Image (cartoon, rainbow, N blue to C red):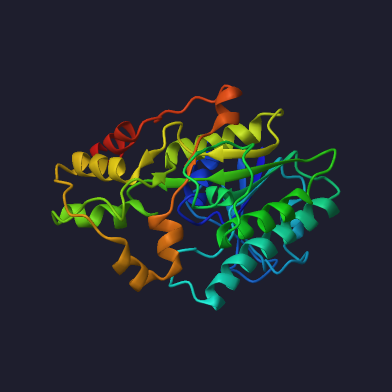
Length: 311
């Protein structure tokens, strides 16, 4: 099988590519670190292994497009980090454009391909549902009306353009992936390591999370399941409150969870990013994956953190 992954060098893309390569599949990684059209086999990944192809995700088809020709699956994880810096107007625009233009480029290449992929799995996020209403959200719930919801709506609209009789489109609305070597967990755990951890803001805001291994396996399952199309929430079945997450991290690290962090200094330092990523929240459940028989290895937060910190 041939799998093409845009954003395959990041926190989520790297383990996904490694699993496919270890099983003997051909993996193509689209990366901005090489000139468009250039290719470089990644040493130590075997044959066919992982080959990196340079691309420019500018909304157009480029000399990189032949790299996805004949792929069985294309996975889109491209986009600038949301939390890389304070949310200025310029950064918000970069976040939006990096997702929309990359997805537009991939969709155009898929539509132009003589041998299109069977499936296009395109990343989105639970930010689609907004950050105010704490009621339970499934894939049938409507979009929110804030900045991240707008980004996700535009992002998904570009992915849907790739739909054709030969290609089904999966929209992957990811929650917060947890693992030791990246993402937000190391930052969240740092105060607890120094005995100053605890809930943030009210502590009642919901956190929709997923163990990274479950995220990888869900993507692979969606790519392989012919009946899977449309939106899927990539979250664990049991979302938690911020207070419950704080207690679980403290328990896993054998630390107390007692120091409350009020909302005001977070807003002062982070601006409106604090409301979207720390103070607000969403209670999102993977209703469609569960109804179709996907089994989560780590459905509960204590299970997930125990596995992460005891390995």
